[in-house]
Image 1 (cartoon, rainbow over the protein chains, first blue to last red):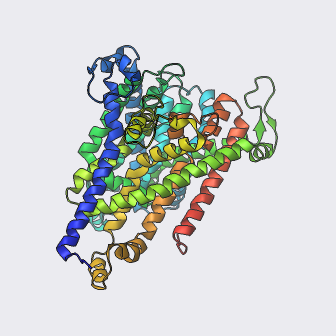
Image 2: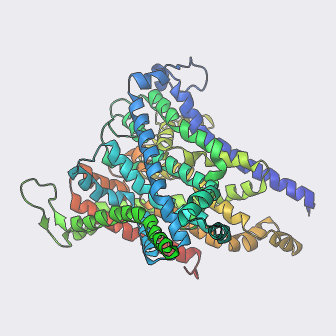
Image 3: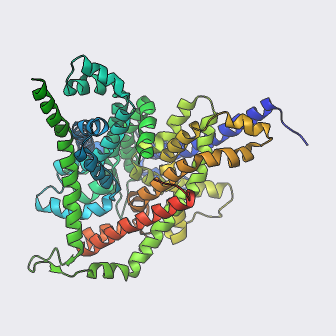
Length: 282
Length: 295
């Protein structure tokens, strides 16, 4: 029987790994590639069979039409406002909270952690029912403020949870040194801990923002017009019963995924750490 | 002076937790108690009569409704299919990622589906699965698997299969990241030891990797099950629950009762039952994957 040598064996392993990843590459990229191709097709090419891959005149105009004909900008604007606003509020509220529960021993902090866990366990679709009625009564349905508020609720507990993990991993001695040198608790939080938790802060920020930009169900239930709908709901609203302009829809979708893809390219390292942290401390 | 400062700092400790705790508690307690209230009433939208208290009637209505069980059944097929079929693929990708050079490049590739809004991913797949001009039909006909284009999303089981495929595409990055973290924490001297005992690759996987990965797999599987039980966007974007209500999952049922039928009591009760079923599924999954796991 043929037994591969040590070196051969590691070569086989590398090859198999590359094959798996090559397959992953195609399987991941192809749907996006096909959306890109479709987004450049003129309307007449949408219904031809067999579908054409390259041999048609690309119509870059589709990318202008979605702004002039379909007012896609409104959805992007809403998405930017809601995702950025809610991320900022979530950090502003969540950072001191996570630091306090990580460092100080007090009863209230521990009780509040149960609240954090409960908030993460409740399905958005369940909590959407009372929120819909409450928002209806106080006039927050279909407003940017309402959407920002509901997104804040969605990931503020996540920020507390992840940042608590990052603060826990910073040795307490560093802070004690600062305290001996006369720094107040506020100073040691803002001057020492926040800079040290920088990478964690980065990943919490990025993940919260992407969650806000991508969120579907809560925004879908609590908004019904261009006033407050975000990008995923906007793209879905192009899908109509009689006729769906797939080329415009795909152009809008490509525009919608660009911001998060750029963030992924630049901040990949933060993302991996933040995702793993958020999951493992569940 | 010193005492005064300490007092201030104690107040400061509480002040740091206060705004966030109040926000979370208000945003959890108010809607949660309102949800419980709603689940006991009917005719909440009726402008003339005040809502009538019906006790557990809403829960009885939901649990005797065949549509609810149909949707629950679909939800479980969708969740279990996505999680367990996906796990095999995700495990392979994680192991490959752990082995290969240029990890950073490959990690970016693997993470792409996580970064883009999943509703948009679902529309990408819906377009590829188009019955007349879809690229998947075209490819399958070209290589001879199909004789002519078929209606992928027009049949319950076929539609379900492709929803699951799409969902696996969407959920792979999160699982791979968690699994990769687990693989990296396996002590590396275990593998040479196993090789010395003559273990081949599969035996190494069976006797070294899997036992070490048990708790990581448990986290992956239970986390994914929890997320998928409540998810609506993928199915909604691909089939809207159709044909008819054949692929409806429970979240679509709750949405329909809330928005389209105005049946708030039913929606609240179904939402509460969803929480219960999710907890049961997660506990059972945990017990199966790791029988003697202790919190």
